[in-house]
Amino acid sequence: MTARFDWYTASIGAEPAEVIARFESSFDLSDVQASTPKNGYERAYNFVRGSTVLARVQFGGSSVGSNVWAASSGDCAPDFADVVRGHYPVHNLLRADVAIDYDEPGAWDSLSGLAIATADAFGLKVRHVGDFHREQDGRTLYIGSRSSAAMQRLYEKGKQLGQSVDWVRAELELKPQSSVAKAAYASASPEQMFLATKWTRSIWEALNGPTQLLRPCPPGSVKVKSDDDRALDFMAKQYGNVLRRKLESLGGDVEAFGLLVAGLIS
Image 1: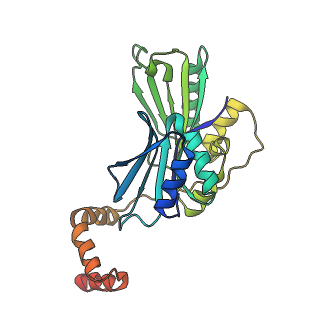
Image 2 (image 1 turned 135 degrees about the horizontal axis):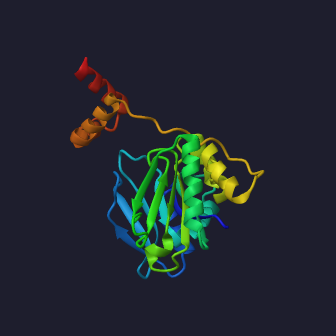
Image 3 (image 1 turned 180 degrees about the vertical axis):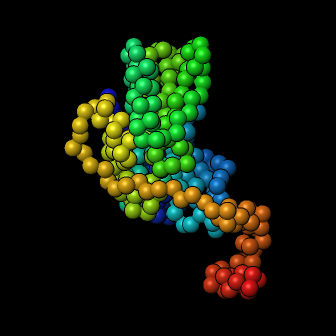
């Protein structure tokens, strides 16, 4: 079975106007439409063809850095990944979903059995969502935690779309954590991403046999926030605008701003 990208999110170190121009020229018959920015960004644009959103970019904002955030999902993701990697081989991968489709009788039973056995062997969290009683409307099985660097979804894609009842999709959601991993996985193949952890490699080799492929590097661990970290997050949400205005009044001098804050709490 062929593994392909079903989601690709990149952080690109280039001028927004340049990224927009290159994406526009890469997506034939596409239009650029202003969109609503999210997650602290100030500006956002969608690249659309008819009713299909091919890709999305966001940039600007004092809390998000100077890079351009760019993403695509679904059937558009493989071409988008090729465009990003072709124009910006040096970028950071923030998230990639790798999908493999199976359409044969018994696919759900064999794949879900493998997933649960892997979860038991590696002590992973298992979550069931959907119609596990009548098995008519589609089931989804999650292995691992959404907050970790790697998680797998297994779901009945055919039932979701009203098509073949045997069509099952296995998806790996990979979110590299360290700066080294984000750079390394930006050039990794979909197959290599399945080798990111011991448990995802175990699933890959159970389905495809032993492989000589090497993972680019460990994907890193998600930092568990302390009570103090969560309190600071809450403070930033509550008083972020006040703090931002104060920083601007100091001409963006981060050192002076830090000294001011230190003086307030001393």
